[in-house]
Image (cartoon, rainbow, N blue to C red; front, side, top):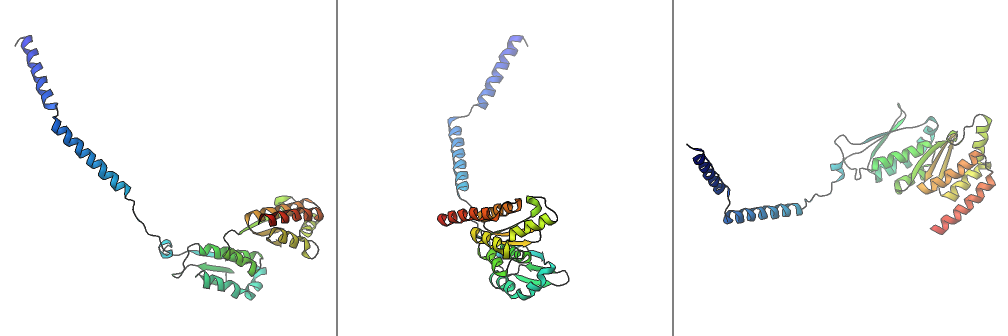
Length: 244
């Protein structure tokens, strides 16, 4: 076969391939219609959001349940026996939790049960018991169960200023004041509750009020005279009244 005949045969084969590759107008319209229908169906499926019902407390709770342990200091065992009914009643009756005192380990144990309605109740109960063990009264600690914006903050005197011996004793004396006057003044002005446990200080209240009380306590630890603190607290109390 000559070179000219080979070239002609190759051109004819290419034309046949092009004829096979070419798509007719009817095929193109059918393909476009199928693509449009598939796109619209997928959009409809995505627009239909799944509907999930709210979970109940039993569904949120694990099979093992939640459990908390709070250690009771030795100096709070006697008050705990006296105020046990005040602690037991709100936890069992209102929060629907189970509570017991383990005398061997000296710990209060709290756990959820089938009647527990809110999964966050056990943490509230733990904060309530912990506040009581730190030295707050049962009535003041009970506010942690009733209000959601209350917090508990703890710090030591050495966190503000390193003091030892008589200097530390004098700083704690300045915080308490004569017959507790300074401590009560800070509590009433800032609407907080304060517990002085040796060199540790526990403050119960809202976030903003705790900040104001800590500033006043830190100033007393640094050596500011009580009269200056009283004047500042008076200004703060008037501002808080005006705000509310």
